[in-house]
Image (cartoon, rainbow, N blue to C red; front, side):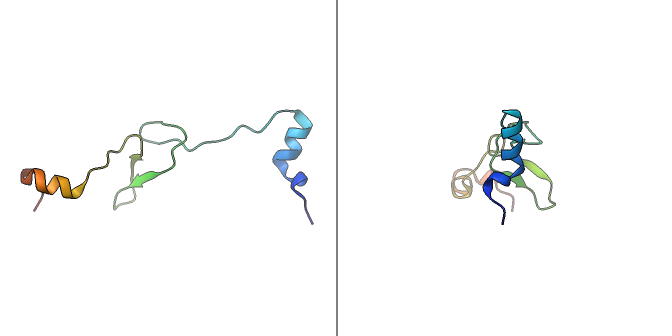
Length: 71
């Protein structure tokens, strides 16, 4: 049975004295690091992350400006 001390990252830290550098997701659109969510369109293309994609309330948009709706 393996113990947590057998984990490669822990062994590397014990051997070198340096912790493993953390890798964070990077948005392919804006380059922001540490993104928690990427948004995709229907074709699977990434539109961006929570930093570069704006959220719109569909109810407010449809009530305020009927010109902006696509029928």
